[in-house]
Amino acid sequence: MSRIKAANTAPELFLRKLLRSKGIRYRLHYKLIGKPDVVVASKKLAIFIDGCFWHGCRKCLRLPRTNKPYWIAKIKRNVNRAKIVNKKLKSEGWKVMRIWEHELKQSATPSVKKVEKFFEK
Image 1 (cartoon, rainbow, N blue to C red):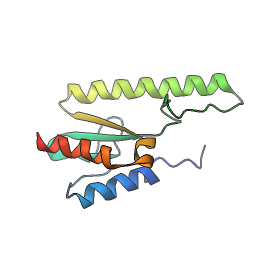
Image 2: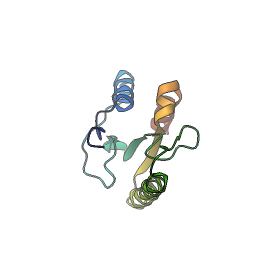
Image 3: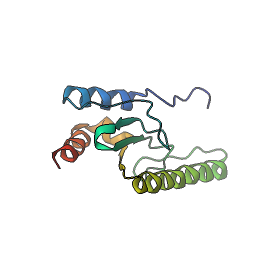
Image 4: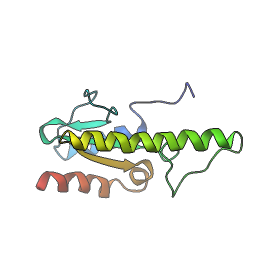
């Protein structure tokens, strides 16, 4: 587990590159609960890119064959923590956007359009 990256993952870099190409300015390492991957402070938008394995994607999740009880409990804790972070940020007036890793791998266009639609409001 020590080799698993927490920041600057391929999906995160990909989304940041697309946002930059659309002219959307963002910040990294912004001090917020949950450590969002991308923050647009001027619009109070926190974007999280959730890994399919770590956040229990119903479409992509494949549990390891060994130590299943540990991994099931671990993923449940991650999902519950994400819900708590969402509630906390929303109570502070932030908009929270969660994008699945597989959404970026298939086609990032819908994810970027979701962010652009937020800016049109």
